[in-house]
Image 1 (cartoon, helix red, strand yellow):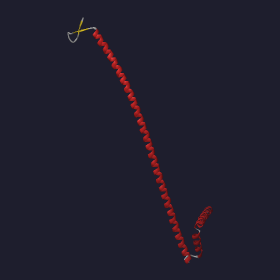
Image 2 (spheres, one colour; image 1 turned 45 degrees about the horizontal axis):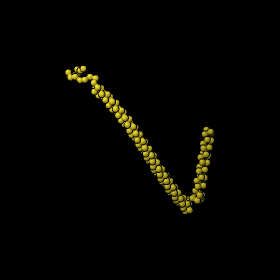
Image 3 (cartoon, helix red, strand yellow; image 1 turned 180 degrees about the horizontal axis):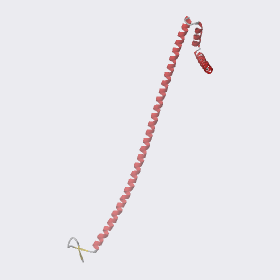
Image 4 (cartoon, helix red, strand yellow; image 1 turned 90 degrees about the vertical axis):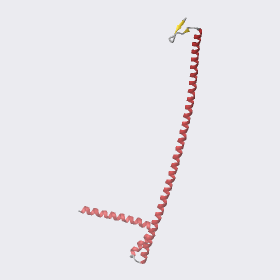
Length: 167
């Protein structure tokens, strides 16, 4: 029994045992190849997952290191700012002390000059007494002067109020 093919007039045996063996072998080889590919895909999946896990751990470690580095830099910057602020505060304090001493020296010189004039007799006697008292005890005199000034302002204020009521 021969069968004609579309390619020509050649004949080939149909349904022989050899053809069945080739077909059976083809199915077996196909199944074996599919199983090999499935195993290979599984192995690749395991390798990919392991690589992804390693990469994830590496990225996490780098993030932690970067976080620690940033934290250290912030602490260093904070310490630098604290030191600069401390130095600036000390500089202001030194300048204030120096200015205070300068003012104290000038006031002392002015007081001594006024005392010298009072001693010379260029000031009237009551003024000489006041100048000496101010030079010897400047703080109480300043407080008393402030109190007198406040009392004078109050007296002027009362006088202004009285005048405004009379008019």
